[in-house]
Image (cartoon, rainbow, N blue to C red; front, side, top):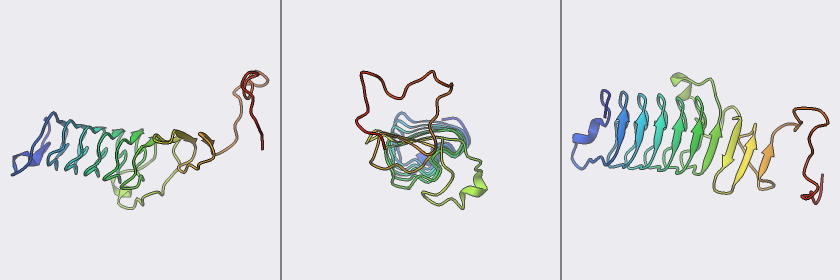
Length: 181
């Protein structure tokens, strides 16, 4: 560990650290016996008690995680509200900051103008739409939306247009759509 108060509570009774890496002020500061976590940035994975196999890069990334495992947050304030969820991925400043505390298998690519003060007012599930939002368990991807339904694997909030006129097809002659609505 490297950084003031990183793995800070390691000396307390019952605390252990196995293959954890902590770089930055209070990185993995509250860790009880979480294993194989990598925290790079001040307060990254700071509340973690039992979560394992998490990777956080950025100030306050995965800071609220307590028992969640297999999460990846790259960017300041990523996955901020998630406490117990597993296998979430967020890339970008404050990507997925509004995730529910028990949500699992979520994917976010976004950049939101969030700072430490505005996080105090963050409500689970509310906030700006990300560029990409995915359901990693049910294999669904949304563009420009933070909600996904059960009607399609790819979901778009807005019009779909080609980048150039009269050069691209929708579908393929060997892979026809059964219906259009």
